Length: 204
Image 1 (cartoon, helix red, strand yellow):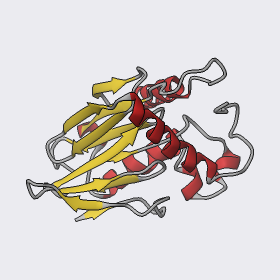
Image 2: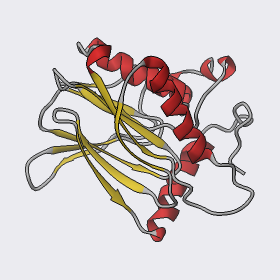
Image 3: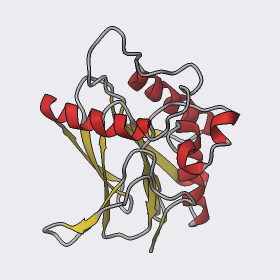
């Protein structure tokens, strides 16, 4: 059985079976997904966004989030859970709480982190990827949850496949052509929220 948080995903979540019979579940920006199904893999595409892959090493329950910006303020959170999920602090709390509700325990958790690339150049772009990486590392250090693997930074997007039951993660670095489409996906998600920029963070 699988579950997600209380928010509705920003886009329809896709799932399909691969050649081996495993069920592949996609996580879009602003979404998270938790499962204890040993036959499920979670996949997400990352540019400047970051994903945390978290699991309970005893029970195998775990999941993935995908956040766009590092942190929020109370005004942002008051807009509702759909919008707040773009922020790392809310996305991490939602993912961890979903795992705890399924019997996961803090002292048994391990995390792998991915993403945070600077996929498009230009001196006017703030280092959103680097800010996302710094945030998630700081958050997990504060929570006392170990990061056991990472593939972060750089200039190319990544496709992540994660199996919570085993903790295995596969990372595929994508080419520059893919960077355009991944960045567009993240930008399209950002544009669904047409308010003023959040806090001090702007994209351009």
